[in-house]
Image 1 (spheres, rainbow, N blue to C red):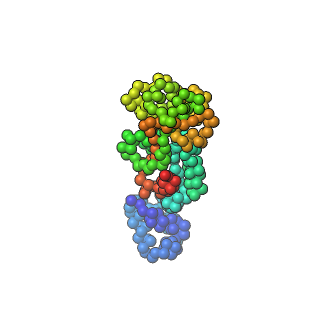
Image 2 (cartoon, helix red, strand yellow):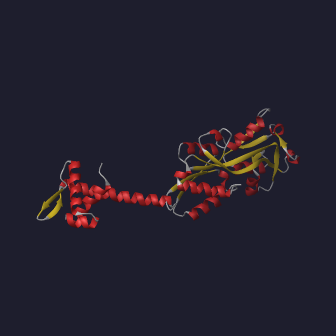
Image 3 (cartoon, rainbow, N blue to C red):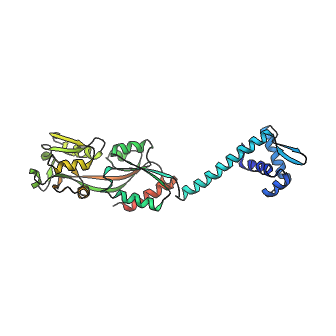
Length: 295
């Protein structure tokens, strides 16, 4: 295999046209350089240099070898520099998946703080439901996701850290008949119109599984792609939506009241990732950054 040292030696001879001068530039002896070039020519099976009028010139093969060597060495130096930049977190990219409730979770502030610390890092953000985010994490289309995980997800080949755990409450119009109760049961909810998020959101599944446990399914339901839409319909007394207190506080619909569920339901947003952060310094820095913000 041709080494970088052999490439450097031939390029030095090509620049100077003289073995002695090239050896001086390389800080090696002239015989040592001559022997290295001879060995390279034997290895390749073709002359790379020829002597004319006391000057050394490249053969056609030598010229091609020199041109390719220059490209390879330049790329190698650029690669080494890039790796140093990666290790210093001055460059690179990170693909992060976020939930649509990123604002109530104060994730824009967290992402902006990370970007200020590492301004040259290219951040690509994807906002989708938990299921879609986990699918993209599994297919290596994302490096890390902040998503709601179920028990079955915790058994997958991923690493995860709890970020935010919150109770899930029923969000209903202040004039709704159930607004007078201090807490709502699954039996009460199955007789009402429920406003649920779409199938790509794990929260919907958590709610339905808890309501159906030992009971009949809900009598009627609507589905929306965004939690804000669910709350907007509940604010118009179209049914009962579900959210955490921080989500309700963020969107602040004036006619909505929150009622806890009995038995209680909680949801936990996790930071999940597959790659080993020890081998990916940028991912490690992001994980540590989010850890510092977690409960």
